[in-house]
Structure formats: C-alpha cells, structure tokens
Image (cartoon, rainbow, N blue to C red; front, side, top):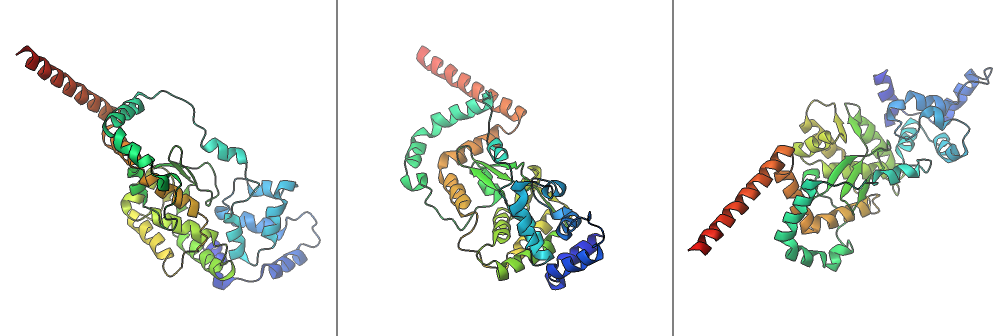
Length: 322
C-alpha cells in the first residue's frame, strides 16, 4: 500500500482529477451515501494530511471549511491535491497561535544568576549594540539564514510547534523562540517533496510555499550537529538511519531550484538574523549552554564562583591586615 501511495503522487503518473471523479461517480451513481472522490483521496493520503483538523471533520457540514474544500475540489491531480494539503488555511484555530507564545511567569534562580553575571560583565558593550538602529529595525538580509546550531549559539531557542501544518513556522523575537512543526522523514520524503516542488515551480511560480519551506529547512540543516539538535527538540523524526542521510536529502532537494524573491519566510529570516546580530543574546546563550545546561553543572558553576569570591575576599583581607 505504501508503494502504491508513493506511485500515485509521482508527477509523471498523474491523470486529471476530473476524469477520475467522473469514473468514480459513475461507478457509485446508485449509492447516494458514498463519500466524494476528494474525501476518499484525502483519506487515502492521510499520511500527508498535515492540517490541524482531521479528514473526517474537514468534510463535515461546516461553513468555515468550505474554502478549503473548494481548493481541494479544484486540484488538477494527486500531486496538486497533496500540495494543497500542505498549505496553511484560515480554519486553523487562531487561539493555538496565541497559545504558542503564552508564557507563565515563574521564578528561575538559574536565569537570575545568568542575568546577573551577564549584566556585570557585558552591560556596557551590549548597550552599544542595542542602540544600533539598523539592528533594531531589523534591516538585515532576508535571503539567508544561519544553521540551527549557529542560531542556538546566538540564543535562539527551538521548540516543537503544536501545529500540524508544516508551513506554520513562527519566530517570536521577544523571547527568541522559533516554533517549527514536527516533520517525520523517511524514504518517501524525498520523492514527496521533489514532486511537489517541481509542480510548484511549473504551475505556481509566484506561490512556491512548499519550496520556501524546504529552503528554510535546508538552511537550518547544514551538518549532522544541526540534525541532532532538531531531533532532540522533536522537530525532526529521522527514520533514514543516519543524520548524514538527512543532511544530504535536504541539500539535494534544493539543487537546481532558484529561491523565490518573495519567499514566504523572508520576514522570519530577517528577524532571526537581527536577533543573531545582537551580541548579548549569544553571550547569554553561551552562559546557559556551557555553565547552566544541567542542574549539576549549574551547582558546580555557582560553587566555583562562590569559591572564587571567598578567595578574593580572603586575599583582600590579608593585604589590608599587612
């Protein structure tokens, strides 16, 4: 069944969906209760149904789903149908977007220590950086993005999004959280994206949304360390057997395909690059990653700091007593 499903979305195997609909409707003309052909197709391709509602709920009598169902009915063939299933639509609950960045106030003594150390060491230079109007306005390049590990070193925090739509990627520049929906990568991922990207390039050259998503992931995934980070954050579920294979997959997908001028994630790129350009974000991240990454390391850091202060105090007292 998996092989049949894969063969049906290959671009060179496509038949017009309108013809398949007519054959299906003639075959089930005597059964008025049969589901529509598009409904049946969405069930068959449920593995690629990346939306925040189920297929069953989508085809219920709900006015908020009419536009999406109309788009599905207008698909040219199965490849076009699968592309439509990846797009972000307005029926997705806006409350889930607000929930993503809703943070409960909490007291974290590790964060307090990090903030105190950073303030005493770097305040003057950070103040100079933050006063830079170019960084504040975010006027930085919007066509390139640093890899996941470099962004983490700059203070960006990766988080698995609660949204199922792959294209629903958000960056909150206030707290540095980049939310990315989880993606399961297996041996069907490469032909799936390649066929949709080829179809987009030829039929939707001004709306290459899936291509834009793949380009963003390719920027993030430059090495096995990047894959390891995204796997640990549950953003990537790697079923290819090795991290190197996943790096190669995304690098190969973007070969010979030009990046669109009006990239869907251009603003996200600019915001991430602007966040990366502020020095104290990187300094805070280094303190957190190297000295406060675990409870024991935090205790050791604080103990070493206390010992250093006590030694310094003892030295000063000894000098004064002379």
